[in-house]
Length: 364
Ligand code: SAM
Ligand code: DTB
Ligand code: SF4
Image (cartoon, rainbow, N blue to C red; front, side, top):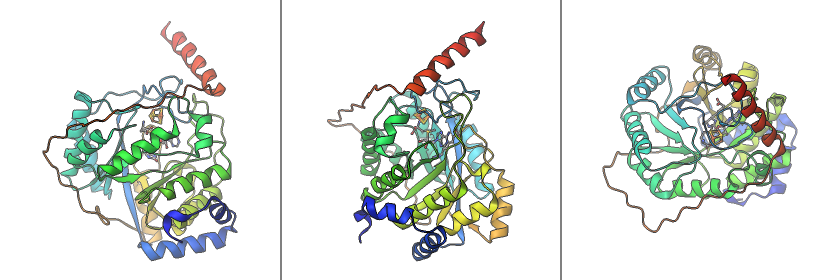
């Protein structure tokens, strides 16, 4: 069976396999394509925090919810360089810069992001960015600045997407992934489990990801971090064995991708994480913060690596370092229309009202 030929039935069957059998199969696939003793350390850096116009029900950075994150404008080159150098010294081979934007707008802020990308590229780290929706021209400019990967998650199935976000459509996500691919960027795209979706939704998301040709080089699996003030604040953490299962199925369905054990590690034991590595996770996000929420302490993670005999992966282990090119990129015939589905998600609408009310009260 070629990689893109998975069916929903086959993925669901995998998902229902007895856990230890599933982990064994995933571990076997992992060994065919990856070094099981290497795990990439990737560091997240929120270069622009909060104030996002979107209504993603899981996200503490959506302006309409009442969360107590610290909002920040774009970071300076110096701030980013300092953070990247520290991350590199502690074993990170990738820096992923995140901005709380709906989409990239051309102009001074985007030009500044291009400078940030060049700065990190020159440190010989894999540079990844997650900036929201992107046109092909913008993707090309990022590539010329030395960007290695673009993170843009599908997050869940197309059906369930409509239950968690009303301000954009699934097709926008797929379009951005295609734009990034056309610009020769590697793709990082995965999702979140534990948002109330069904197992079938998880399998459907994996099916869609597996049908991308080529499949994404990196697939982050996040466990929902339920943040107070978001519509998902009361959602219970996903059991660890569901996470292991999801990692294992992802591993089998996309055998050459790096599966990233992403948000949610603060609620996982070392034993739980070790099972995820066994099941094929080949990367973690490290550093005491993800974008806005806590993450395990890096020294604790390095101790865990020591205990498990894991080594951090070197940068550009699979693909070449992108050169910085000073070429002009001109948009030709690009007609960008992102969707505005505008359906109502009652829980989000209620939280938006509550957020506004609380903000008003805190101003008086
Ligand atoms: N604004 C851009 C976008 O939406 O693509 C980039 C930043 S956004 C915060 C990146 C990803 O973080 C989301 O797609 C989602 O998968 C993940 N994320 C956000 N909040 C999360 C949470 N509370 N728990 C787990 N993952 C989360
Ligand atoms: C991804 O899949 N997970 C990371 C990264 N890609 C950008 C983000 C996790 C964010 C968790 C919530 C927060 O810290 O704000
Ligand atoms: Fe904005 Fe991204 Fe958060 Fe959605 S996930 S609210 S687009 S920062």
